[in-house]
Image 1 (cartoon, rainbow, N blue to C red):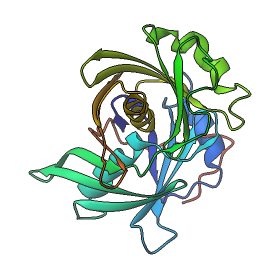
Image 2 (cartoon, rainbow, N blue to C red; image 1 turned 180 degrees about the horizontal axis):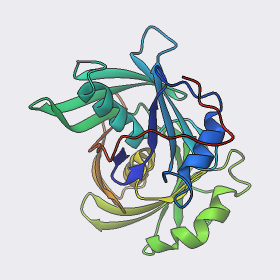
Image 3 (cartoon, rainbow, N blue to C red; image 1 turned 60 degrees about the vertical axis):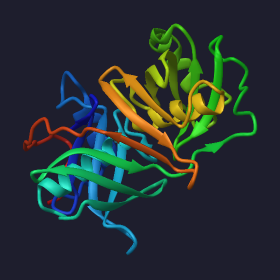
Length: 266
């Protein structure tokens, strides 16, 4: 499945538990020798009674991510349309807390999904891990760390993303966004995802970009973030301080795979 081109391999771990998901992600995410994806997402039972399902995410390099908004939307569509859960609101356990998904349903099809991404978190030096790429930057966490740089040159993501991900200012590494204001409340952004490199889209990155735009006076509380693979609508609500992300989720194909040297438990 993919959300705006941010594609993952989804495994229903309630049926097919994977003993070494990091190795699985590395092997299968390879776009030449595997299925090809930005990583692996496991859909499983929730470990707590206050959520309906759980999500674990492993990047293409095998590292585990805290949260992914695009993946959350895809899980919402998957569990509803595959009749795992027949409700328009789903509570999803993640490593960055429980996220609530609101499904926009027409004729039993999930057209779009809105995810309550929670409150953004800032560092005391949010506005100045000093101009790491020669532009105005802003640090914000949406359950995972992001550094948003406002610039006229968003394509520098491929050149500067790798070094910025591993910059000493980010001891746990960081997701990097390069964003440019195209018009009122619309930003073009490109993303270097921690552990995956350049991706077509990043849900938490879109949220971080919208929050940074508001915090630096570049936009109001509603923004459209245009990424390589599509657009996401973001709202940072004043009443509860939560960020809400709305966008599509798409099936690509179903399949079975056998992989040498890694045993998949069934």
